[in-house]
Image (cartoon, rainbow, N blue to C red; front, side, top):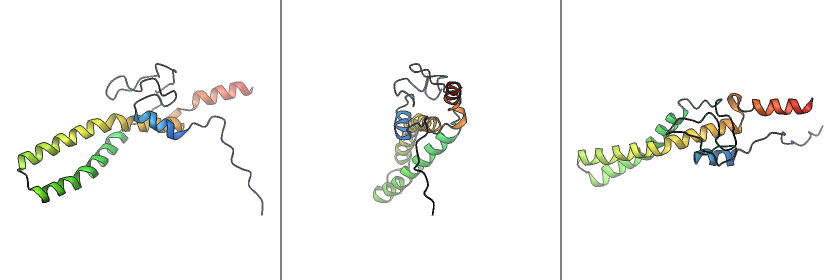
Length: 141
């Protein structure tokens, strides 16, 4: 039986957990200081602090899907529990849960988008690793 050589981390490995935490906080996944967004959901072309390029990001519909999934799974059991326990008036019931769903969605959407962009950056998806690869190739020659 042959022994496998121990796994050695690649030269340009990016830590995933710190990047995800920075993305959740809507900060640059690289430095953690610069803002990821220039508006509510509009992503900067590059980090204002470390100049990391954000143009390769492809969050698309992922954050919206995750937001709907999370909000639905949190509010559906709560809706049922409140209805069975208290039987509130329909208008009061609708108003409270509609405001709650909108508020939770508005809170989660940019954070989940930052999380997805940070994951793409950490895993070098969609061209996030091209500049590092070019630098490494240039240094080797």
